[in-house]
Length: 90
Image (cartoon, rainbow, N blue to C red; front, side, top):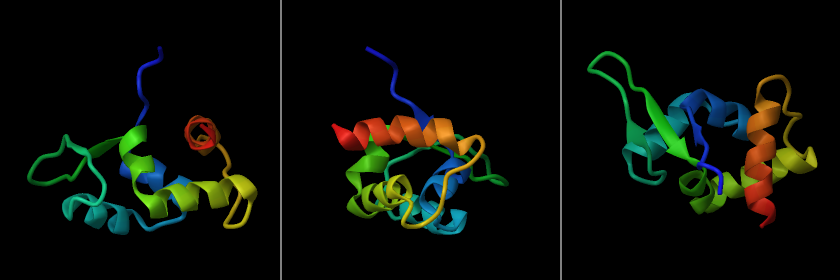
């Protein structure tokens, strides 16, 4: 069994097309569960795949990326998207 992948706010932003501040707001409000790794000067969160996919909107945005409805995932995002897409397909 593989270890569950964790994503940064910036990675989630690339995967979903949402602004990073929107994602941080979702985390602060408890809509997306995340581990806080930051300090008083830097909000640094890590979100597990299962937490990300538990939110219906996030799941739909990731599926939209998969089908090309929102945008193409390029560069570093390809690996992250592939991992999330495998979970969405299950």
